[in-house]
Image (spheres, rainbow, N blue to C red):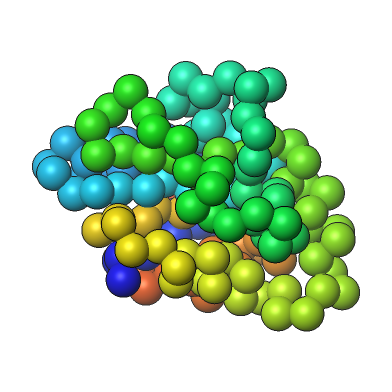
Length: 151
């Protein structure tokens, strides 16, 4: 199983997405088969890697609702060894739907456990302590917590 790292902080604007994208890129450049999971409804990691959100046929929203397998939404990027599980604003609606769902806290972990081809999985979390963030934390082996350097 891949090593899973969640990049998270409940505060926005601290560099979560920038850190997640750059770490994923450099791990891939170092030869590690890397999957970046965009788990933020803003979808900035998706658009940051040049993906047109209007052309997506499946996203993390459908994975979390167990309508489609994670492996079926993964798309290659323009960078060798780097793949993306994209997100769109529909992921915000998914959080509301998950509120009463069974296994709502472990759905991301379950989806990742079925992946075999990656060395590293990086999860770009939303800027909140939400059900999505909790899923990311439960799925992760390690947590990276970017903070803004200030008083």
